[in-house]
Length: 466
Image (cartoon, rainbow, N blue to C red; front, side):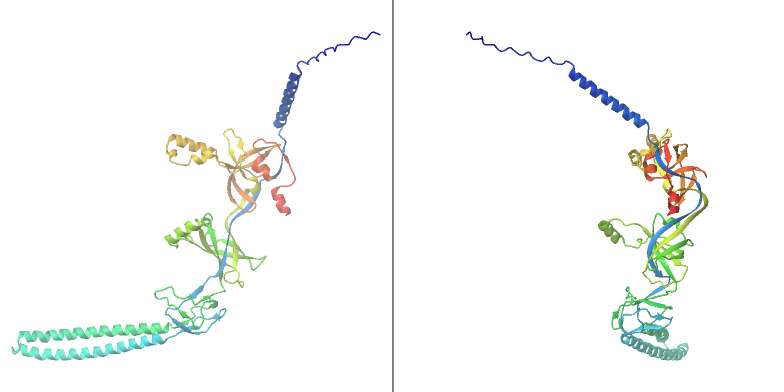
């Protein structure tokens, strides 16, 4: 048999490459991106309507108030401090006792002052004796002068002897006058010593209650002649009480005596008391502090807020106690039947020259507006121009007024406010429908010409329901 010849392997032809496949994918991606961008801008141009709440502008009575906190004090209270130093030997009252004017309060050990009085009286008696002696010497000098003058007239006495007798008479008269003055000094010393002794007994200066007692019998107290003295007790008239509250420097200019106030005392819950402002401080509470203490306190704890004390008299009696905490709401200004807008409806925007607004952060001021106020650049024409430009870029108060299904940004001028409304002095008229909510729409989303849709309820309606 013949063997078949061996078959040699045939070479495999390579698969042909597809031309243009990469370009296809690139073109597809570009087309998809273009479609996405077109859809994005199409949707962006069609802004959805912003849901808001609206109300019509009306007239209201607005009462502006200032709120402050403080403590209750008696209108009249007296701090009892001794005028002499010593030990308290008798104490006739205790804290809480009611005393009448002239009642005995306490006695201070009098032995030292009794001895001083006896010494003064002895000096007084001695001065009286000296005066009598001086009077007798004067009588003798007058008699000697008269007798020797007759001798001198008869030329029986020399000039030098005559002058000696005349001088002796003048000296006797001067000594008598001096003795009289010494008597007056000694009498004044007696009166002073007697007064010091009388001060050892202290009586009540007013009718009132011993609201605070700091000393007890047996303790030594310091007089107030050259020192601050010991504050032994405080007597207060608890029938007339007042609230003393601290007011900041921004609000103190709005207050004056005679304004009405509502007072809330923590100890009397759910009850408000009527009051009247009786006194407004002319200087801040820290004006009496020394410069050194001011510097030390400023360096250690920073500058404290400036506070002014205002006193409010309670119009109705109640068993208040000194030191109770009190909150005061003082009525400062009132506008009756004035055009008003809800507090939530007023915001701030930067008005552009073309009438549009910037709805950035409410109340924010551009950086260039702050920088333009520094230095002395405003004195030059360029600086004045920059200042005018900065003023145009400052936020102004605005409200959003409905114009069909869009809103219009309207700048307004505001006056006083209460808890619910702003007084609108310019920019709105009665019956205008304005946006009152929600907060995000007014503070950020809304702008001039934005499309809106009305939602349920308004800010004032929500408050009336609640």
